[in-house]
Image (cartoon, one colour):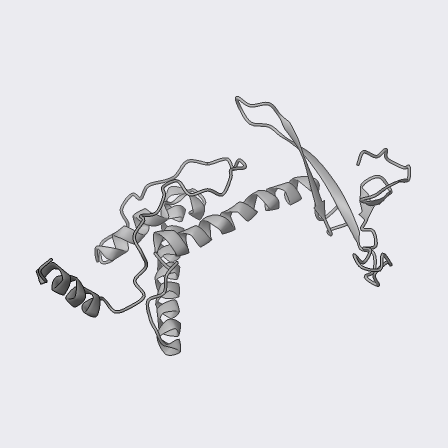
Amino acid sequence: MRTTRGRLRTSAAGRTIAGSRWLRPYRRSSRSGARTSRPRRAARRARRRRRRRGYRSAEVTLVTTLLVPGPYPKEAVAALYGRRWQIETNLRHLKTTMRMDVLRCQTVDGIHRELAVFGIVYNAVRLVMIHSADAHGVPPDRISFIDVLRWLELGCPGDGLPPFIINPVRSRSPAPRIVRRRHKGHTYMTRPRKPQTKLLVHQELSPN
C-alpha cells in the first residue's frame, strides 16, 4: 500500500491516516461474513533503506504500535528488529550447542532439576562472556558461546580468562528452514536397550 503524506487512502489491508499511521481493519467471520467486535488498532509504519557493501540497497518496511516517533525513531525500531534475531541464536545455543533439545529424565522432578542445571550452566557461560567482552571492548554477543562452554567444561575457571574467539559481525539474510544433513534410517529406541541386546544376541546364535 503506497500512500502520500497528508492524504487519506484506503485499501483492503486497512486505512492510512496522517501519512505513516495505519488502522487495522475489522475482521470478517468466515461463516457469517459479519464483522467481528475486535476494535481497530492504530499502528505506525516505518521505512528504512538497508545498505550492505557489495549488495543492492533494499527498503525495509516495519509496522509497530509505537506511534510516537520522537522517543522511538525509525532507526531505533529497525535496530531493535535486527536485535530480534539474536533471540534465535540464543535458543539455538540452548537446544543445539548444549544439547537441550532432548531431556533424558523420566520424572517431573528430574525434568525440573535438568532444566535448572541447564539454566545454571547457560548463565555461567553468559557471565564469562560479559567479562571477556568488557576486557576486549566488544559486545557480549561477539564472544564465541561454544568456546566459553568448552573452557568451562575443561575445568579451567581457576586461571585468568583466555583470549576467547571473537565472532565477526554477521548480517542476517532470509534462509529456508531446512536440515543440512539427513537423519539415519534407523528405528527409534522405544524399549530398554538391555532386552533388545539379548534378543539380538539370541538371534545371532540361533541356527538358521
